[in-house]
Image 1 (spheres, rainbow, N blue to C red):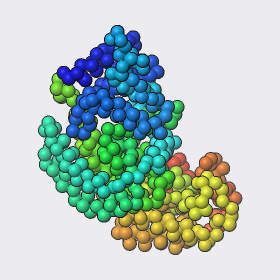
Image 2 (image 1 turned 60 degrees about the vertical axis):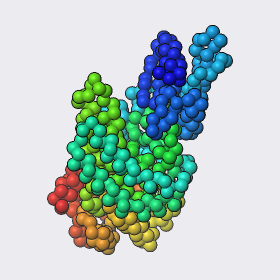
Image 3 (image 1 turned 135 degrees about the vertical axis):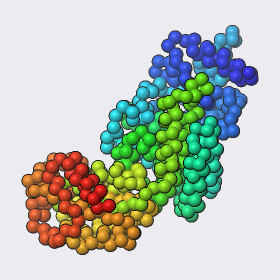
Image 4 (image 1 turned 180 degrees about the vertical axis):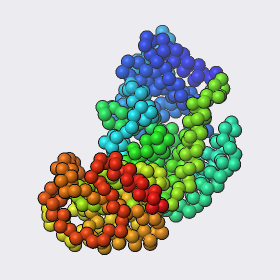
Length: 507
């Protein structure tokens, strides 16, 4: 045992001797939980990817952890303090004696409130998923841009590192590992120009770097990102979409399909439109992240419990997810039309998680695009002058342009609008043919009383339609509808099932 290790063991023994203290060990740190406080001490270890072998390096790592994490989790990260030795040889927390160790002082939160635990207990609703996306988007907005050349060049190394790690222990089929690596390298080769361009335009940043669900915690009803990578800035300097992909992948792993889709759509809505052009990279990013977690899961196996069925199953589910994500199916375009109050937007959001590739379709709302054109919030009301035929044409043209961008990236899109005119519907049929993807057109219908009742009950909605507008729409000359007509007068669940059946029948 080194002098550093011996000193640490003496410190750890002194800390755990205090009544009520709980100790948690990881490969790189020991955490001591005491009342409402947690002390995180870097272990005196040296790995290929980190070096905490000296007191000076551990102090610097503590200070860096505080610097990286405090901006997004000030309620968790308090300060760096010294563990000191008094003249009589006793160990004191933040004493006046000689510093013999350093710790990050943190809030002790309920470990059961991290999102990996919460995901096992309940479904994440729309508001919670939106809050997750907002927290991630906020972290990326303030993350400093970096030279992306090293990041892009590191991706083949990541792929090979995953292959080598997955081979350890002979837990996964060698042929499947090789296939995953081969396909991943081929995908990267096709993506290289896109990734280089994103690096040049500032999308490579010093991100969180380890954004799986166990590193997001619910505090005061808000998700908080914590435990960002502090020991290697290069490992955390990645494309923001790769950072997002970790959380998306883990939501898929935990069967939170709706939440994963909502997080993706909310993030896209809150960040530059250029991210639509990065959707082609998402399968590779998701797959790499899943392969990493497969290795981490296997690393949890202890020699005495090498046949732990729960851990082995978890690792295999991550590995299977990595293999499935790298080869996404052909995308599709789904257009949802109908007069105001038929439930188009509700349907589009509910349908999106079920539309491959994962994590589901990108949803594009005509009402939201109109608000963006006028530079107002989604729920701000626009005057009648914003609803002229000329402006409607601009809205649908923008809707088609964004759908094309999504489809061109190999991802599915759902567009949502009234589509009351046949030429509006025809334009999206032409778009699907141009993009060589299948189109499913769904036109929702419901009686006026039902539509007006729904409009009257709306709160915080992007639509400006009123009950009077709904009555006026009864006189629209909609013409021949060659889309599938769906009776939407029942519950949202009934409408969703009818639409799913229509999509299956139309394949």
